[in-house]
Amino acid sequence: MEDLRSTLIKHGFKFKKQFGQNFISDKNLLSSIVAASGIGGETTVVEIGCGAGTLTRALAEQAKRVYAFDIDVELQPVLAETLAGLENVEVIFRDFNKINLKEFEAEIGEYTVVANLPYYITTPLVTKLLEEGERVQGISIMVQEEVAERFCAKENTPEYGSITAAIALKGKARIVKRVSRSLFYPRPNVDSAVVKIDFERGRIPVKDEKMYRETVRCAFLNRRKTLENNLINSFSLTREQAKEVLRLAGIDEKARGETLSPERLAILADVLYDYKA
Image 1 (spheres, rainbow, N blue to C red):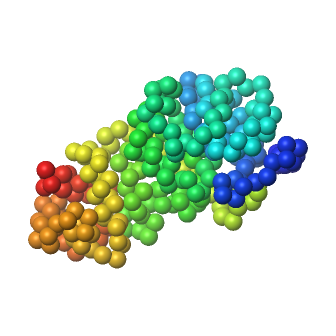
Image 2 (image 1 turned 30 degrees about the horizontal axis):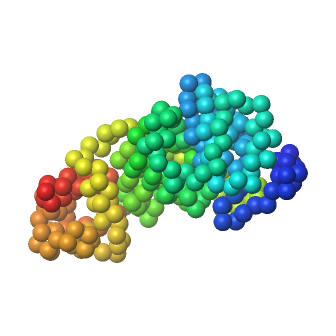
Image 3 (image 1 turned 120 degrees about the vertical axis):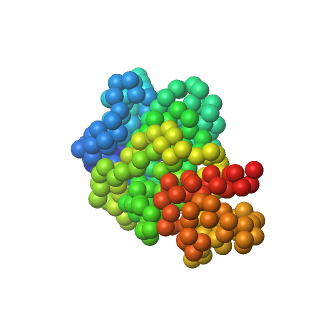
């Protein structure tokens, strides 16, 4: 930790609260994140929010190539030092959420995302990869522990939500490591966890992915309302039409969205797709 601190101080780096910067330097933690990701000598890795480059270096020592994104250009002299001597790392000072992912994937081919994510971009980033990523093979990310629980939640629990169902369509999420806040610099106010999402194309078959996403948004539009009412509001259905859709999907008309598994939501999405055709 002292080496990281001294490097940052030497280059006059100032932490920026708006970027959610909390860096890690514990070598055992870095090694365990890399090991949990399952990357190897033929893996292309995309890291988002590379910070001071400690995880970047650990990834580069195992991967074929690492594309490391960060939004803070003032990290440039820090990264020049921490990544010195590595020939398989390309640092890109851009907002990953704003890149054309299709064009980027055409350049790099299949890849795995491994990152210690700034908390404020976690859900938008995962959503972008789920909806736009065609060549991403998996995601291993350190996130706020509460968010990790949400990613891996089961239906009919307080943690279960739209992002849980969105992830389930494309892959399986599991928590592989819990991380104390004491291992970060500066120290955040919450503990973290590493979540691994293994992508499985077609693991929950649906007729139309866009309709599935719309159905998921509908289901969690208002957790206090029944799914019937949310259907009326989201799809401009009459009450009788909403009842008919639920009947065709085999869902109780008094059910609430958070009680439906991703598989049940997929059935509902397929019924809606046919109904709206």
